[in-house]
Length: 508
Image 1 (cartoon, rainbow, N blue to C red):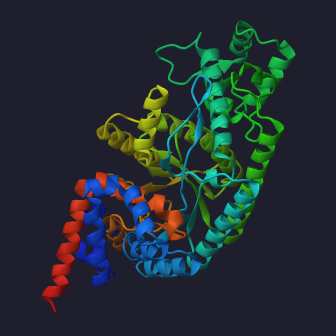
Image 2 (cartoon, rainbow, N blue to C red; image 1 turned 90 degrees about the vertical axis):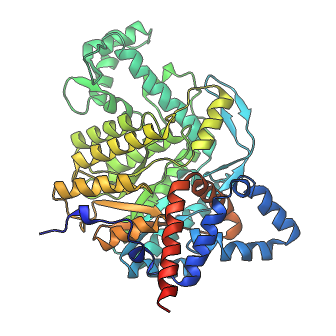
Image 3 (cartoon, rainbow, N blue to C red; image 1 turned 135 degrees about the vertical axis):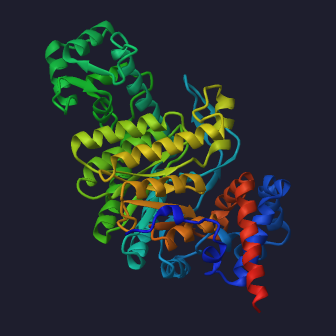
């Protein structure tokens, strides 16, 4: 008889921290304490810049490496990362390798409705585009992460950011095209939509009538051909997920239906860059297949996420035929995340491939809200943390209801969400060790969750960022900001660390 998940105790600090040395515990306590000082965290960029000017790069980097970097990062190079992976492996915790270089860049964004606006520097998990050669270098780094994971993990992950492989502004342009494609479908079905219809569809007659109403210069023969290509389910009615999947991922073309766009088509240079991006992706995926390493495609800002979702979906349809190789990321704080997840699950079910994802709450809350205020559009993020928690748990239960036809990682520092899934797995008699449902937390955060899950037999992972100290600084600052916002969580962690230190000193 399997041990019930109800015995899982996230308050067991001895299990959570027994792998740590006293020096590591003291450093963790120091780092988390500093993260609670709002004035330090809010001025972190200025303080680090000042330190570089006064103390110099060598001393500043040494201080950071011994404190914040040591707590949140796996190492500056592959040799150091391997040591971190080995330490985690000894306690049955897997790793998700992530080259964590981030850019603080002045970006130019296309404003909804046209035009562009220069935006102040922001700490955004986005790569700085220099040229195509630089993207090739990023692809090589991703390849090394895959091979490093394979050498130390029998069932490992490597994280990948699409912005590392192409020009971010190109992804934004692609996202606008995708949004317009979705809007066209809404226009086509608007005449037949009813309160009772939960799923919008288009029959051939309705499709033909709607196109003519929208003044498309297209013959009935062309309409018949297009309808047949889109309606892959052969049901006689086009579904929304079929419509979106008809959008060609490389050129974002829908043939003659592309005439509806307000956004200009991609020029030859941009199409060339998209093809280069796909070539890099194919190279990395091929390496992952050979080495049996799963790829987590990370989520990014909402204004480029539609393109990333579309690209990832096309890759899943190609590579997840029998086992999950490509994992997408669902951000629970986005209002449309539940509906998008349902759409992908329906498509996977109908076409017979495995939908796989990492479920997160979201990492760009401040950035998203600041941007929507600046550009005056509705914020895509829920207005309250309670709404985000509910949506996150609803999506988790939706994914669980489709298991084992979908595989997923609960990437969360929220104890309630982890316990919810553990209890549901127990009720449904789902194997802990199989790994189809796993859990993940960031290195340096929520050890009381990760290690207790691992001790209880669940597949648990740590997200292990690595890279040169100066390049990883924006990442470290974001981690400090996140810990500053999670006061209840950090208070609990600090309390556990103090108790563990007291326990050890008491027995000396």
